[in-house]
Length: 473
Image (cartoon, rainbow, N blue to C red; front, side, top):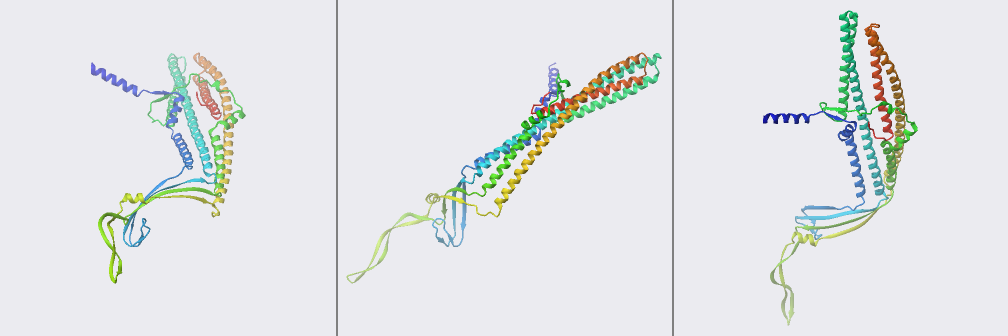
């Protein structure tokens, strides 16, 4: 019994691991934000803007670099330690540290920091715009799945109704109450309803696949979605005024904020270009030392020697005279002793005054002015795009509301007509052809109501999107 119990437990755990997941719209949007490559690229662009800002700020700091070199000299060369010409082969080694700090360059660093801050803010707005686009696409796909699910329910109900009619009509034919042609007509319609059901189920599968693709999920990922319990179209009927939506869109849409920020950044390009005509002042500093294989120093004592100083005549006698000095051995100067003895320092102040730059500064200023004008035009284009999108959204919402209202009123009439046709058919007043016509008309209006309902919801949420209201259901 124990192995059987363990096997059953393992199967239950495995089944729970692969259980179907049911997500709300908020879960779908959150997952899409984490998985979307567009959002990730926008996040990386924002990180790049952070790096640019950090680099611009560090331009104010002093620089420092080190240099180490080893040289081989052959023939007549200058010894870097003694600065004397040598005619023998020798090796040398130099070590140095140096750097500089920019004291003034026409405010260029300050302009670059401001521009980097603006670009960083624009990159954050771009990131939010990317998130908004993903969210809007997910909402649309989510609503399409809900629409297809309701269509499947209606198609299945209609198929079940036709199945009952086939059974009832078959009994009436067997009893001789109606002609067999009525049964054949209803059976043909039943076959079409089964086909419609298969088509609706396939469309639901495709819409769910499209949603999974937006979520970067595998096609075989066992996922379903759940609709809010209060998803009634009537709450989305309220119209919104164009001026209210348009002003809100201009103030809140990240696309607008990014375009406005880029106009400011382009204006700073003009200041940066102008700074190329101003003088710059910098401070340089350095320290270094070197070593040479020819460097020598006095070593151990070798005793004393007499150094002749010449001959002197004393009393008519020539007497050689010398001085006794101590004799030392000559050895190579140790490496680290040379490095310590040869340390040198340098300090310099440099001023660069631009006089003529082959027209480079003038060209940079002209390009900056063109870029500033282009950014202003792009801002106007973005503003006009927002205006057009808001106008279309409001017009589409108004049309969807009207379609839904008309379809809903038509649905009540068609439902009464279908129910009356069923009663007349049951008592033999009309034939199956008239009955199916009434039912098909009712089913068509049902489909129109559903389509208008989800069009209405999406267009309403699209207006929320332009107003900066988070999209939820």
